[in-house]
Length: 321
Image 1: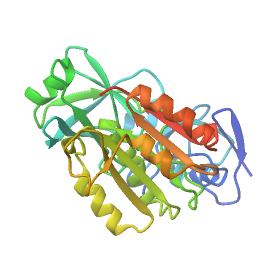
Image 2: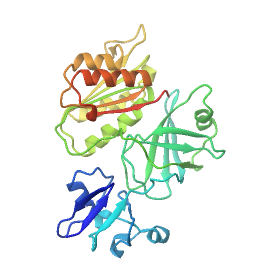
Image 3: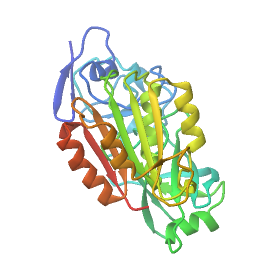
Image 4: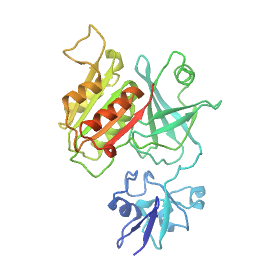
């Protein structure tokens, strides 16, 4: 029996168990995909010694020399201390592979990384322009074998970075990004738990990723998404979310508008957070995700707690654009 040290915790592996199986069995949240070593989404690094050679099959020579390995196919021969990659202040390279408007002022930007990634849908990365200008954006897709990242970029009238994305960034151009950060993401292990997702504007981006992750893991507890905007143009993924609600009986989508003279037979009138908390006044045992305008997020965190949600079960991502 060997021991695996990760994030200052030590776990004992069982006979013929891989490193990934050991960590998942102990409720450690890990990014992973195929579990066969093909997609490399679960890439890790051995800190104290070289990992088994068979766990490095398919990795670049530079990665092998730095003791990177694939925990999904690594059956440890000795005790190991391991860590996720991309945890230092380094930059990674990608190419723009898609850019299209989701609405008149929101662009879907898709990047393809030049190396395997470790991230959770809903986390954020820093994007860096060629001249050093940096902006943070949340990841709106789940991890995949193609090592792609998707973002919802709101085009601000005087936005130095976002206007550049709209006017100058083209498919095929390079773009640097940082490692993924943040704790606002789906957590496995409670498939029956009710989830409440509340967002405004492009706060939908991390929520859309979290929703996809939950559905990917066959979450069967109720999932309620409330997305708020002033007018209908701000509900930029209305069709996609409506289709998901029709496909999955446990997913409910409520588009909310605060403007006047609107079609309130289709939409719910009012602020998304107020509508959600009026509908669900007892949140004991729920998991709550709050993303978007900072004042809304912080106010909603307090309300969710007062209505029974545990602080440990409230995840926030406040941003203004």
